Amino acid sequence: MAEMLTLSRHILQRARQHQEATGDFNLLMSHIATATKVVSRMVAKAGLLNVLGKTGDTNVQGEQVTKLDIIANEMLQAMLDDLPMVSATASEEDESFVPTSAGATSGRYLIAFDPLDGSSNIEANVSIGTIFSVRRRAEVGKTPTEADFLGPGSELVAAGYAVYGSSTMFVYTTGQGVDGFTLDPGVGEFVLSHPEMTLPDTCTCLSINSVNRHRWMPGTTAYVDRVIARDEPRYAKTTGRYIGSLVADFHRNLIYGGVFLYPADSKTPGGKLRLLFEAQPLAMIIEQAGGAASDGQQRILDIVPDGLHARAPLIIGNTPDVALYEQMVATHG
Ligand code: AHG
Ligand code: MN
Ligand code: MN
Image 1 (tube, helix red, strand yellow):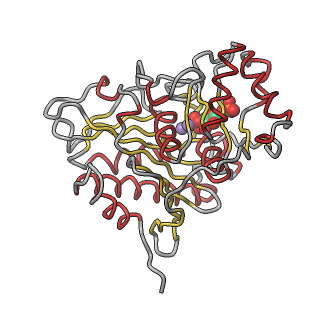
Image 2: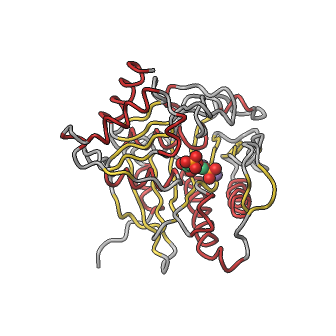
């Protein structure tokens, strides 16, 4: 029988080769993975559990909160709360970071997550996901502060996501490439299905909410027009794909090649997506898969966030296509 390389075994094997080679880090990663399995189960049963719909509240981003957002948030927090190596967590759904019960002062790691990304799609049974990142505290032995979270993405020690699609997948990196796992629902384990994921060198998908065109900056319009003209060999076969769940759009483009854009525009001049919870982790993954992520002017991983909920424009995908966007913005503004 073929060998079954589960996520836990893979983490153990990888741990022997990288700097976070500690039992602590491995336990942390498996708790995150377990939390995503629970969320996956809840997403799958959502229609039966009466957890669809909005709570009527708005979150710190001013957006409507769905019940599953809250449930996923609580699940991740609970799974991380009793880990002594975790000092604090920060979530897209919470205004402030949350110190853990077990490791607030002693823990080495800080975890940031978007518990449920793409939640506007939940009721329509469209793919959604969870995005996370792990960073190390500069100093342990003191109470965690918000500033501890506000480092550039280049300092992340790990990042990943789960996508709850036609199957549930878990994709992660510790800075040594990207590996993808598919949940075997019978066994209840993530099994290595996409080892050493790299971006194919083709711009198959252009992903942008084109209804926002009237709000775009001239450089964005010029870029999109150039790609969709399809008269350059690189863009001859490019097609449009946009789900509205960043994690699902990202995952598809990682598989097929392409570029995803949530650019700065007249409504959101600083971008819509969140640096800590969305842009940094996906930027680490795309670079590890051979691609690039930019805010239009600089590398996402170099940006120092000015708050937990800082936002950034996000242009992410194959390197030549991200570079062309930067060039168009430099030329047209
Ligand atoms: P979230 O569900 O975590 O709030 O994120 C929603 C984000 C992201 O998933 C997606 O790419 C983007 O919003 C879609 O925005 P538009 O509907 O403005 O295109
Ligand atoms: Mn999101
Ligand atoms: Mn979310």
